[in-house]
Amino acid sequence: LCDQLREKSKSGEVRRTHIILVAEGAVDNSGNHINCSEVQKVLIEQMKMDVRVTVLGHVQRGGNTSAFDRILEDLSDSTQTLKHW
Image (cartoon, rainbow, N blue to C red; front, side):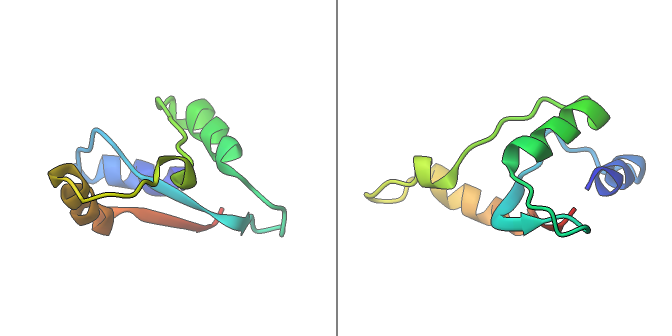
């Protein structure tokens, strides 16, 4: 993950934010379970990034969608899903 973020940076792609999704049950190459706090720790230590963790279930809500919700949905096309670390 860190290598991919570095490559994007070196290629001239300038982004202020990244959205990284960690699935429940995610495992590393050795088969060890990983979670959001571990990914957060690695990004802080290796990339010197400001990292915030949000649990999707904590922010889901009912009601009508807002303009922000629609924009966020469009932006989610550019997210990277962490399958293997």
